[in-house]
Image (cartoon, rainbow, N blue to C red; front, side, top):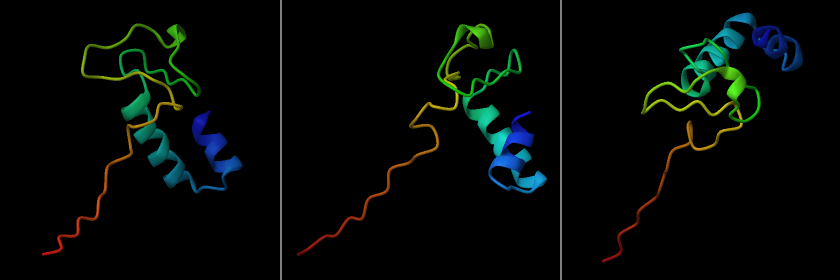
Length: 75
C-alpha cells in the first residue's frame, strides 16, 4: 500500500518507492510485527522491540538527519 501511494502521489518509479519504503521500515517500523505507522508512535503497531531499536512512525525526527558543521580556524 505504501509503495502504491508513493508511486502515485509523488510520481516515483516502482524501484525508488520500494527503496524509500524499505528504508522507512528499517528506521521507523516495527520489524517484530512488520508494521509501520504513517503517523506517530502507536500501540496498534504492536509491542516495542528491544533497545536500541526505535519504533516511532514516520513523523519521528532526528533519525535520518545528521550534524554538519563547517569549522574555520583563524590564526
